[in-house]
Length: 244
Image (tube, rainbow, N blue to C red; front, top):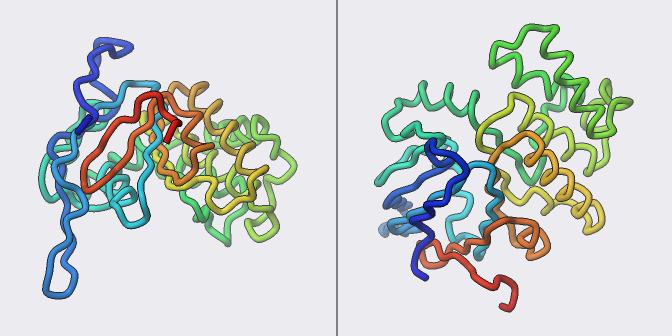
């Protein structure tokens, strides 16, 4: 299969959670140009969990950055929840990402001078939540993550697993339509990674969000509804998934 397109059995009559059409991206390297994405097509249903595998340097993180609007699209089109990102200017993309997309990083990216609760609350404040509503949502998430007693702790006092749980809470706090995760268990030991993975999957389903997770781990991929690989600049969908 040369692409991952034409999924028609969506869970409702609205737009897909994510749609990519003929997305290309190049990087200038010295006197040459390296093409990492070569006409990528993809459609992701609402509520779906999709895992993306591929070799280091193949363009997985670039693809996530384009979907989130962190990097500017060079060619093709990307729509999140029916909104075409290529039609937005930089300021509009920033506002759209802040409201509709959550991002989970491998190395947590928590603000070291903010407590666990403050790290989660920041995204809510940026989205205009009132202080009372923000406090209630933060408490709800900390309780569900079994971290209520760590609300006032700074990141350097938290374990790796605790930091990643706070990062997950921050990513889903504003109830985004789409959550992007770049190697969310890559900086954790195997046992903690499994726990974090189960937690992330359960929270995504509970919140009714869509998740695309970039990973090198087949253990992570096995939890997804669909498995994609990025090879030679093209997406391919794996069937009968794990006999490879």
